[in-house]
Image (cartoon, rainbow, N blue to C red; front, top):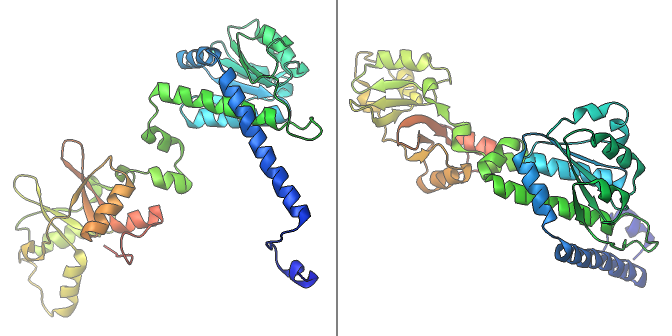
Length: 350
């Protein structure tokens, strides 16, 4: 390949001995770390259950702490705990030794990460915490280390060998710590009965939030919807629609039994007003009533709503609670806007 092409192309599928060697090494790194994780899983004992039970039994925080790469892993473990229902913060040991130790209270769980088990800053923090009723857990590669002797519970990753050719760069050890943190967070999540709905409350933004959103999150509440009765005059209809808070994209018509008879699209009435020189405002609205939309439960997912829109082609859905009562409407347009998906071949305005 010419030098000119190499300059202009950000990536080219090049095959030579040097690249093949790098590729083989990259695969070896991943395989060796995967093998190390198998050993960590086999070594795991009931201590992780002990830590999980203490976290589940307290209303306090899980404070995760480490130095260097272990500290970065601790931040990830803390974030995973927090997003799965366990209140958690990460704390730099140096900050803790200069005043931030005050963030830790009686009943909290202190989870320390140290591969060597001899990290001096963590040893000082743990020594200071011994005077408080704080449960101390440790993730380490050395079960007989100084920190392990002070901890109430030790989660050992074992004497893992770093995959770095120098044997120095934290690689295998940090991967093992992170996997152990994931295991702890997930068994706690499952013991809490943490649901998809709970997860959605902590992830309202981005594609994940849209995926987990429910019909109740996007529906028009009953108080924002114009509600009419059978036989209502057009004058009443126009006043009711114009006074609605949502711009009156649709109005609902109820019968004597409080059930939905149908809906009215204000644009149909507006079109007649523009075409007609005179419109009988005393006339009944019944001629403008369209069939009731399909119904969906308020706790259904937006994915469920999309399937209904695709199947039936309507522009709105009736929203019912678990007792089958009418509590609102769901707009096709709102679903498409918030989910980033189309409920048909084109976006249809209500």
